[in-house]
Length: 452
Image 1 (cartoon, rainbow, N blue to C red):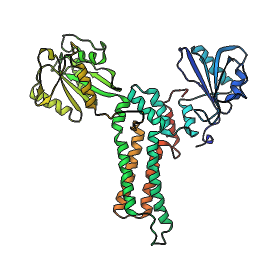
Image 2: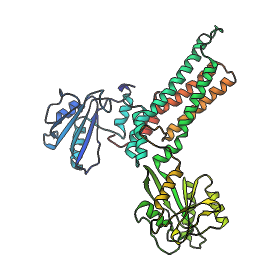
Image 3: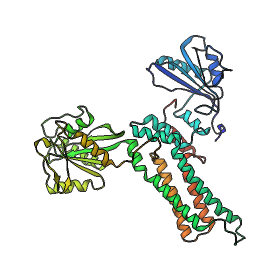
């Protein structure tokens, strides 16, 4: 990638929220030094890169806007790969606005969402998956989500894709070399057994990456946990215990919770979205009926279901709950255990708690974490969290599967080579190794913050 792919404008944007002690305005582009030099008290045109300079930032009329520190970066050693400057000032909304407006008046253009990171990608400082990781880091709501984003930004995912592409290129090169010498039938550059094994290895690695998407997406978005049961069994009390705050109203009146109440908490670095639902019972109240309909909808959406009971349920109730949660993890939780234990329900283990007194809550959170069956996450873990990446991996898997099937059916090298090239293109869509369509780029960077 080269900067010829990108518009030569010099851009600027406020990069921090207003109202803090310190604010930052970023500038990137070939005219960064010239523009800032006109507005800064000191001459920076010959200043060394990677240095800080203190002085007054002035308006075009020469009035002092603020006392600032200017950080200087020369291409290609900057975030964007271009000449770049960061102006650190006081975090006043007025000051930040005035500095940004003055830069625009002096020749900068206001940056669009994600435009700094987009330039970093187009100038070869980041590949596309690393660029997307920047947005994931900003939006990370848990330690695990943060660690996965850091891993992707550091390039661990890209390295695995690069290794796959190297194997595909090796395989494709040997097949195409044979095509070049097709008039010499005695020459064989590609050992079929070796190629078949290599194709199988590639398929296995692609499937492993694609298979991590379910866990990766759950960690990134938070795992939905529905708390369900009859009225007055203690669902809202349990929600308050799990969240460590009085989120839901608790009374002895049946049907108090008529709508869905949701909030998140973190367990071992993973975000869980707990959903308190309306109690399930026969009722003539139309509002409560709507709440019960939503309860069943939340069961469908949840990954984990906590079925709260305070007495042994009837067999038909148990069968109905098992049917509704057949594709999920169901944990049966006996609340009010201070009134008497219930060791099992129809041969299914029961978790004993007393939400009112906080008994067994820690053990329940551990059960919830283990029931999630998520992998241990570190800053070197490789998990797919983007549906765009998952889609590309699925397409790559279809392509390599066609190659294997083609080898089984002894298809010609040119047909095998074509599917290998498609597989390479599918993987390139993830990192942007090939020219990615403008529409895709626009969609990716549209979700970034301005100034990033």
